[in-house]
Image (cartoon, rainbow, N blue to C red; front, side, top):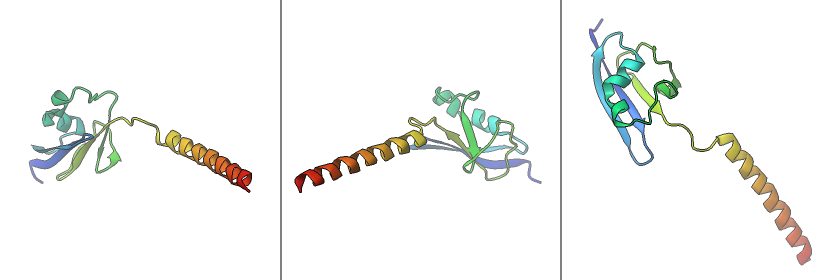
Length: 108
């Protein structure tokens, strides 16, 4: 078994993506990778206590032991709840359909 693992830590921003390749001791955890990446210092909005993190799109805990070639991802909070956005779009669609139908009936 190798003494070290090669991983990358990724943080996607609205305009670009930060990718930090790292070589860590075998047995390193997700939290150790985050701390070693330097991204926590560079982006103070990343909060270890409240943030969400994952490995290849799968939510993972900070104490998860990493494997060689893992991709650690830092997730930003959502600005809008996707369910609420869908509900609003659906409601707007119903209003538009009702409104356009009534206008067509008046035109006849």
